[in-house]
Length: 432
Image (cartoon, rainbow, N blue to C red; front, side):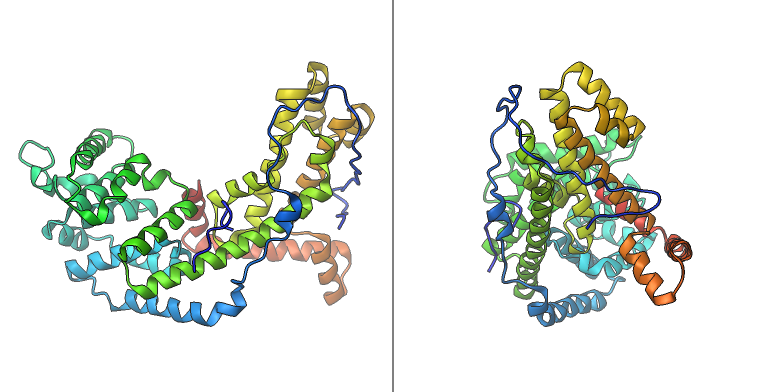
């Protein structure tokens, strides 16, 4: 059921404050042009032909059923028992590694926040589970909660070293290894010791010990979870679970279906981005620059793959793509005099200077940057002409009054959001 396919998984704006300058990019012969980079392997016709059978409307009933089953598992766990509390931590970890956690943000945050008391950390230590304690430490730190490194003291001997009895605990070693990469300033000695202890023992573990983790150990040693691109890790972990049947069938079915549905969203986003890039015409005119739309889009997925953040992916892709073009102008093509003039034009944000003084190829890149940036600014301000026009038609207000009212609505929304325990900042920190 899981699709292999692609590496990424398969109107003019006008306002009083911003302008949108029409620019027609027409290829011209240029003796300066040389082929410095490999050609784009993703033909626009191919990208724009992408289709998927996994449309959300066709599977929404199945998804809701599977989501409710997972919510029931959150409710069934008794936090007052060490084994049950560990089960909830395991569930959160599996959901995150399968790429399903975005469906259960409230349940996960509630579970982790409620666990911040001495009773729960004591339960884990008394249970003598290195895996559960390490998982508890990592998950809470990843979600912005403060957990002291003291939780690991129970796993050390009288000399302050980790006990040798845990050397053959493959699952515990893996969990402690992952946790050791989330240390604060002043904890380096403790966490570096944990990292060295786990790395050495994971390399020495006999293949007969912890057979379920034979593939996970080298995978983790290559790069810890904290450093990996989540979407690629989701795919790897789903395959790992399919091979070893490490989780129940319904959860695995949920992960496969959701992965394909999210991939369908990404394909739709990329198709839209490809049309934008083709309409811009830069890749045809500035043939000395890298044409890397798909790679830039993949970068945006690496930052935020969740389907609800399609606008974020769109603007990141546009911004990074234009940065790549301008970088090539500076590194590979422009003369010193031209680059100084281009820099001055951007700093002054002067459309008149761009039209009058910049060479043709720089006009093309500056106008693309100018129009895209102004479009982003209008969206950020909340006064996109279409929204303003709709509001004017509905309320019969003037353009000035409609913009003022829309800004007021935006400010009210920001005010409400700021009271909600600052979840935006938690999300921002997590993405960064």
